[in-house]
View 1: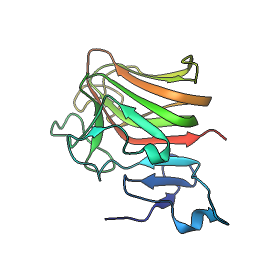
View 2 (view 1 turned 30 degrees about the horizontal axis):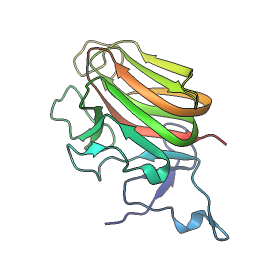
View 3 (view 1 turned 180 degrees about the horizontal axis):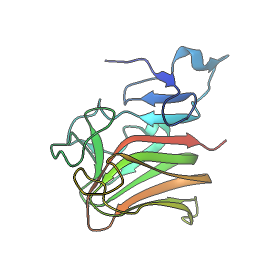
Length: 183
């Protein structure tokens, strides 16, 4: 089943982003002559994927590949989803998840719920660290943290080629994964 791609401005403040699931195409309004103009910012929707599906190449047509990623419908209420039923977690190695961009990104964010401190690291095409963002403490439901579940974490840099989410000795989930291509 195909859905229409949705362009919108939402609480993140990103204008003209595209919210997409695996089977969506770029809408007709985004054509200029015979050329498709790719959206600048994209928010991924994981709800069309199957629970316990390994996430890897499903969004390759949007310019990214996931590694060590599993789609789940959380059964543990400590890890709630925010925008739908499904989220992504690091698996089979818990505590880590990587995303590689086929063309450079300038902004990457996600809503994270973590059982421990979590670090989002961004790397350029040479593998050099270009930016890092830290969720300083656990934020699962009833953790006593001042940080609520599904906290926004993000990085910006001129040419992000890969990001890594790492939760040392713990587990985490991602929801509303967003990225903007570098211009």
